[in-house]
Amino acid sequence: MKAVTTVIIGAGQAGLAMSRELSHRGVDHLILDRGAVANAWRTERWDSLSLLTPNWANGLPGAPYRGSDPHGYMAVSDLVAQLEAYARRIDAPVQSHTTVLRVTGTDAGFHVETSQGPVQCATLVLATGACARPSVPALSAAVPASVFQTAPSAYRRPDDLPDGGVMVVGASASGVQLAREIHASGRPVTLSVGWHTRLPRTYRGRDVEWWLDAIGALDERFDAIDDLERARRTPSPQLIGGAEPVDLNALQDLGIEIVGRLSAVRDGQALFSGGLANACASADLKMNRLLDAIDAWVAERGLGNTLPPPDRPAPTRLPDAPSLSRSLSDGGIRSILWATGYRPDFSWLDMPVFDARGRLRHHGGVVAAPGLYALGLTFLRRRRSHQISGVGVDARELAAHLFRRLGRRCAA
Picture 1: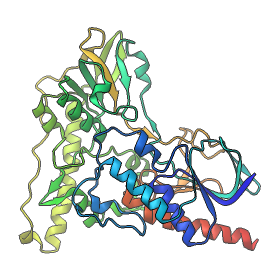
Picture 2: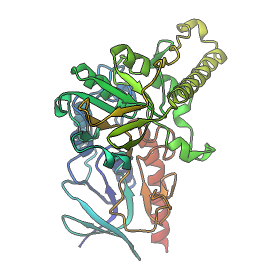
Picture 3: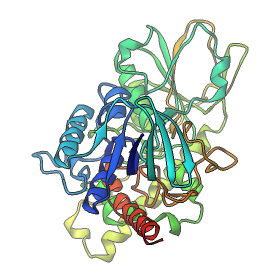
Picture 4: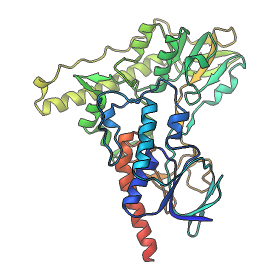
C-alpha cells in the first residue's frame, strides 16, 4: 500500500495551489485526479467559454499573469495550458487517471481507495471544487421524453442540440451566456429567470472585477458574514468573458424571451412563477447598492475628477405579460438546457462530515474531521475563494493549519 503524509484530491487550480504550499513546507504529498491536470476545465466546459475574470486576476501562487493582454479574458483552452505549465513548474506530484472510489477515516489518518490501488495518508485535502456535478432539479423527470435535456457540463456547442426552440433554465452566468450563443445559432430561445445577480461588465471606465477588488468586496471573510449559507448560494453574475452585455435587457434586445422561474412541469406543460418582476427588481436593487459603494469609495478618495462619471445600467425591462406556461409537447420546445448551477460531489467520502442536507461541514475549509480540509469551494474563506485569484491565499492559510497539525502529531 502506498503511503504519503498528505493526499490532495483534484488537480485543478485549487489542488495545484495547495501542492505548491505543501512543497514549500516540505510536506510530502500526492495529487490524485480522475483525468489529467485541469480535467474539468478541459472536459466539462463548452467550446466558446472564456473566463469571467480579466487575465490580470488569473494568476496562481508564485505565478502572476505576465502576458500581453492583462485586460482580456482567457479562453478555457489557454487556462488549461496555463495550469499544465504551472504543474510542471512546481513539479506537482500528480497521479492522473486515478479515480477515488472511497475515503474512510483510520486511527492514523485516512484510507483512500482508488482505481489504481489504496493510499494511506495522515491528512487529506478535498480540492475537487464547487462545480463537480450539475444541479438539475427533480422536476426534470416530468419533462416529456420527446424533449432533449442537457446541462452546461455536457453541452459543447449549439449543434449538439436538436433544431427548434430551446428553453434555458437559469439566468446566472452560464444561463445568459448560453442563451445568447444558442440564439445566435438561429434557434428560438426562452430564458427562465429566477434569483440572479446583475452586474455591469464595466463601470466608470474600469472592469467590475477591478472595482470589487479595490473596494475590498472580494476579500470579505467567511467569519464576518451574518448569513454565510445565503452568501454561498449567491448566483454567479450575469457576465461574459468580453465586453458584450448579457443582462436581461441585452438578451431581450436580441429577441430572447424571458419568463419567470420554472416552478413545475405538469401534463406536458412547463409552469412558470409569477415572480419575475420581483426577481428583477431585487437584482437591480443589489446592483445599485454595489455601485453606490463604488461611488462612495471614489468620493472618499477624491478621485471623482480622474474617472468617468457614473454610467449605471437602465432598470431591467419586463415583458408586458410574461408567459406563465409553455407546452413541452407541441414541438415548440425541442430541448432544455439546465443552467441551474452546480454542486460539489463528495459521494466517495464515507465519513460523518455532512449536515442534514448533505452539505460538507467545515469552518473556512477545516472540515469536521481532524486532518481533513476542503479548498476551492464557494466563499470558503473569502468571497473570492472560488476564483482562480482566491485559491492561493486560502491554500496558504489551510496549508499552515495542516502543517501545525502535523507538528502536533509528530510531537505527540
